[in-house]
Length: 260
Image (cartoon, rainbow, N blue to C red):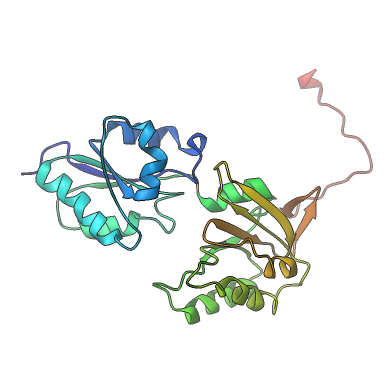
């Protein structure tokens, strides 16, 4: 029989750095009986939640993970934090968990987290200052033809493009193929950049052009890539996408009297 404290939280834990886990997410994890998630994400947070029951499984076992979380809550009356990297509602577990729990009588609450797009953008500068789209290049559950149409549509709308899951060992050419599509619509010198292992000790990043990133060998599943639009530019090694403000550099701005 379900107990009153039975509840499932789907928690976004950010990109990997403890400092990027929101206070709300940390509080929820500490309050739950069970922490569940992909094995690598459990490794990231387990020292923050000592004494908790940990349930983890591998890649490709997402549905089983959700069903097990529902079992913990419904049959054993446990509160469960199902964790996802970044934000749980952006390529995370929120949607699948909500579907799995539908009609069960168990409430599912989604707890937001800092996305890979946001944290990548902060490292690269300010590339998301105007309209942008997130596109995953993983064709495991989305056909490549659909991904290709979305890339073309993003270019036709002159969106900044943030790319998730750019390349892997099983699909090493998806990113290069995507760049070839983008290069049909965007200029070769369009600002581009990537961040690898965001928020972790191995973090590295680079700013370059779209043409240059097409041939970059560092792009893999641990990377998030941002490609600018027609108003993006590189300034002092940072990508900035103009929002349309008029900036004048001719005269120095005087400090307002209120701050003296």
